[in-house]
Image (tube, one colour):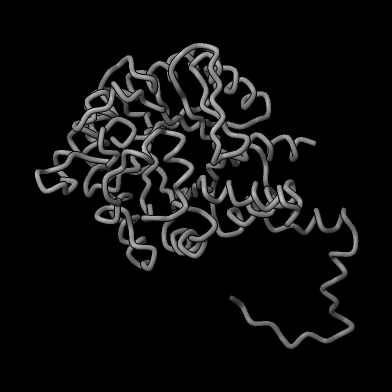
Length: 334
């Protein structure tokens, strides 16, 4: 940061540019727009089905036909991309997560339906086995219950190809297996999906903030053990830079830090170190805390939404995955 001579008051009054709304707008260093948001949507079975999620007030699971309606809402507000997550029925889950490879699973149904109805909206799809495994882990288990890396990567490659064939624009591996970005990139190129992007969950932490999400996809009650053997230790920051460097080298088009607000230091370090698009996921626990605070009058809900989203931009984010995307877009559109 450049050094400046000692300020001479009253010649220098930093409050001058803050004195009026027009001046504050003129001098703002960062700006929010609906184009900064990716809206996560949970997809469930059936038709005409909305299932409110108790731990995520205001968020629901939607059947495919209603997810299409939500995509139209997002496009009308200028939100450029949706992130899809399936609530796989229990009878479709298995130890090997094989339903992830089914071209007619909920994820693929939703991709095709939304692309048919709203072709210009981007679709980001989760690449991980936890919505499909009976044990709730993101990968395949050995006899000791350890999540094995290389066999899991093979399954993830098949899952990514399945989603790309259905019409996904961005595949987003969230599993934290070593080497999966390179393997997926190579497979996408070989199968003619050169323009399908990879957004790597490069720095995904073993966080306590994921609880409501696990309710939403139906894995909280079935998860055996924890995910500390592959997701990152919240104590580590420098390790995140190593993870990001590897994913970029393997062909990631963009990288993600998850969770969001508790890890803004990591976002800033990644942005400073690498000249690539950096995203953050404002995860379910963060969303739920804002809603709980607003519900008891601890803060103005609209202001809390916009201030936290601005914090991501200030830290260096290109964009944010947030359950508040629709609300924020409406506020910004006036």
